[in-house]
Image 1: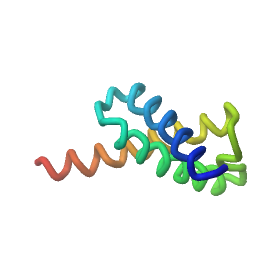
Image 2: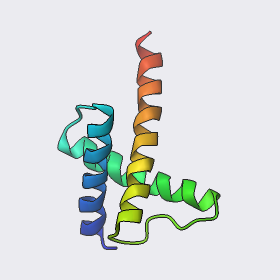
Image 3: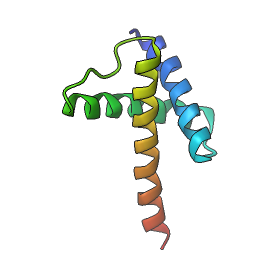
Image 4: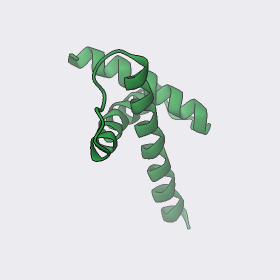
Length: 84
């Protein structure tokens, strides 16, 4: 996948994850979370001996969304601890 594809794919995954968790970040935030989440999801899948994000398909989108959900969860833990 090219750079533009990663940005669009990551943006969609980040928006989906933000919607599922009720996170109200902006578009740029969602794109960044989605791209990093796609890498994180791919890394997690590789740990289990599976392929990560391989292209524009539903399985890869699911991996990217799961990674973005994990990243948002980690960010919430970090932000929650820093507010106390």
